[in-house]
Length: 207
Image (cartoon, rainbow, N blue to C red):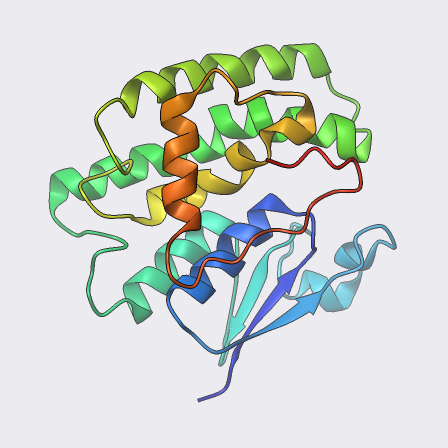
């Protein structure tokens, strides 16, 4: 079987979601680094992979697919024979979707945005992003009380989608010190067989 190609950038949390999930699934894949600083993601060759000019994207045979959460769903539904990563029972499936939305919403506008400011000089309100980050982390800390995983009693793509930007929140000047339940959840995720870390940034603040 031809290896899946993952078009990635070493410091992209969205790309890391897909990278770590491919590894957790034990799939054969090839990393193709995209030169974001050089603008490769806006060139015609890459735009055939993702017309929005963003990483990640994957090639799986004749299929090209973009958007990290969409890719997680695709990989889980195609390759996870256990069905545990993306449960189909209606209530569990809906809860997974809630956390995919959380990753694309509050996590993106909180810890991910704060990190964009410090690592990449994004023209955003850094303090507002920090405030939003602590708001969502406070909610998640309370939710995780007495729970090992975000949905059910086993890890799902809900955990995969939310892990990276929360784990690397300190790179955006968002401390995780006050969130014991979150830190325990991150540690459980990092202990999963096949876990691969994301490259730490030059600022040296990664969790």
